[in-house]
Image 1 (cartoon, helix red, strand yellow):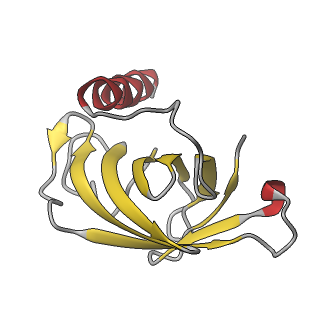
Image 2: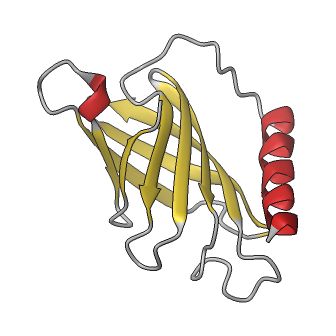
Image 3: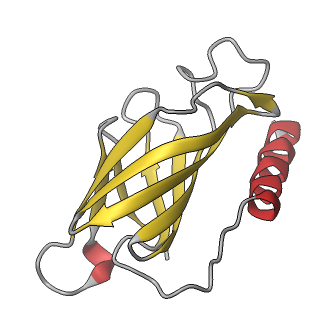
Amino acid sequence: MRRVAILSISVVLLLLLTAPIALAVPSGAFSGHWEATDPGDGSNLDAYISGETNVRIIYTDDNATTACADAAVASFTALLIGTVDGNDLQSGFRVAKCGNENLHFTGFSLFWTLDDQGNGDPSDDVLTNEFGEEFTRAD
């Protein structure tokens, strides 16, 4: 299990080093660290989003039973690039991996919706995607 965690961290660090992600850019409503529990298998999900209108997302699943079903390692990491329009975010997969094994997700898109609860308090925002995953802010 420790080896899987080290591999996952290594993949995220590699993505951060190879992708032009500027975490210091002005933040938008979607920006920040989000976390969720996969409704299908109970695994841990994280989404690190940076940017305002044009965003970068590092999306991880510590036990992706579907996406990594045939892979040696079930730890999933992906880089997505997206565009925000109001409370909607349309994103596309640029890189997707199970452990160190590349997946062919290029061209696959993922739609997200932000519910800011209408109160101006980001601590109770809810971010959902079309997989039925419901994220809350971790930071």
